[in-house]
Image (cartoon, rainbow, N blue to C red; front, side):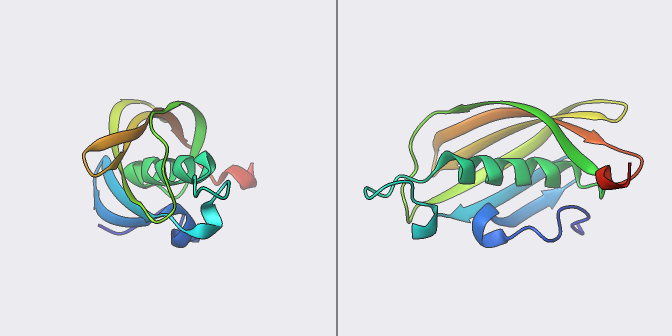
Length: 128
């Protein structure tokens, strides 16, 4: 399936799509030193959120999809050098509104979970 959204995302920072189908996406991120928040190698949560957001956008996969809101929980810390996989599924659709559930896992352990509220607009958000 062709990627139709967020085509200029830096995949080094947000992850690499590994699976993509209608209403579903997986994005793998290998965390790096530039993502560290401290000397112990704790990865800043913004990078995990960015990966999850990217996976949510890909699960909708429309050129005009935007994030309207999110309800998320950080469940476990992630360290530099770890691989995490974001799994996104569209669980509800109502007109232009799509609800996407995203889970980020390190192996089989959940490190992040969230619900992303996405909107598919008739034109690009910056053209309004």
